[in-house]
Length: 292
Image (cartoon, rainbow, N blue to C red; front, side):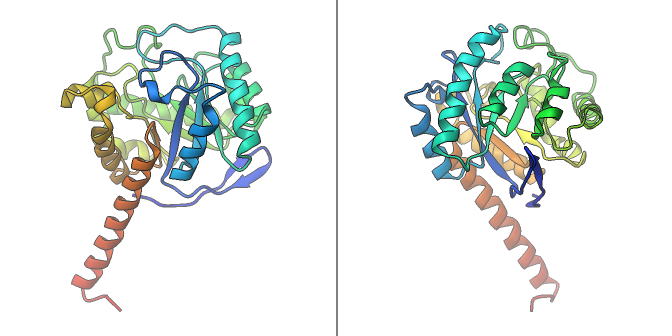
């Protein structure tokens, strides 16, 4: 697991997050599949404060559901949901890094104007052609995610010849396109659960090192998803333990950002993997007679 530090350019300033870090999910939608992640103007500050206290390095605020079968929603409705929450968190926690979860360029621009510092786009710029030039002008980091199809239909019949190769190639191409557009700080997300069967998801997890080798931070989003529940026979409400196991496996394969509903447990997973890795290194040195 890498614990490298790099600099992100955010609105003209350099920010140096230390990886791995945790992104807490804040859903301003009434139909998010995990009800405890839903927030509004009354609960957002309490939930954000808890996540920050538990060690979240990023807070991801979204105003449109991307669960399988969800429709595109209206831009005005998405803005009405997101913008007051971004402003509220910015005003109360000015040092917090806020990510806006949207594929719409106008929503991204409005959220960054009100305090967001990152754009998290499930479409990697494919659903709104204005997104990449907009993010470049905003001067914030950008998460480009792989998705086969659109949320409304993506789980109908997902099909790949070689899912790991196809997703890695797509993300490599999107990194190049983002940089050509003028976005220097790109994060990639393999898109677990977005146009993929459970078998596809686990193949991607096994091959995550190939995506890590692209040389940019890798974000993973397993939190309480179907890929946990189909294997364990659990519900989203029961999927915390399974999620933590997948977080651990992903960290060992180079994941840099864990996007999750459960910040405390993800932070604990990072701490244990980091400690175990360091202990292993010390033991290896001792076994080879290199201890000083």
